[in-house]
Image 1: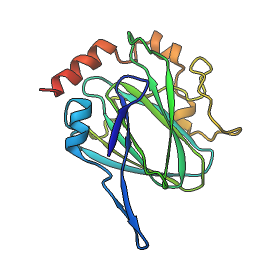
Image 2 (image 1 turned 30 degrees about the vertical axis):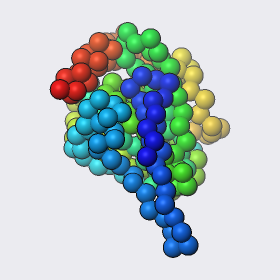
Image 3 (image 1 turned 120 degrees about the horizontal axis):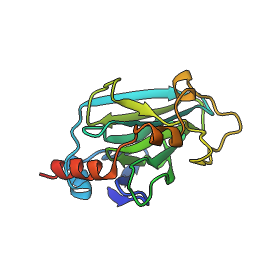
Length: 198
């Protein structure tokens, strides 16, 4: 298993090693010790989520209040999707930046998304199935979103007709969220993850 940081601080790419023969293959999908070594603390697995999306469905950009927010370990179980991580931490040097990672059922890569970062994806195939383990259980009063098609974010979604949920369609722009003090502060995120480092 290879774990490397992405361009946005607090996000990592996990690439498993597959061992296969004519019967199929085996791989380690998750290793708590190796992830903890890479990110500086163990991931508390509080809840596991799974969603299935039709092609061109866009979900996100979702984030949660810090503390405690919600770290995510994201994998594609079936199909293909383009995962996006967005830096929504006010005060971060890369505030507003985003990065795509393709997740699919061939390479079996995963991403780890730290507390305070925004997360979303677009399904590139029908029945794209995403599984993500999170560090905190669902708390609707602490969960928020940014409109995924916000031109100020400028995410280059590879779909001509994105399909959004009513909730994501009604989400504020980055500027509106910033003005209403909805976004996490970089200093709070760093302090919280430092507390997890023990």
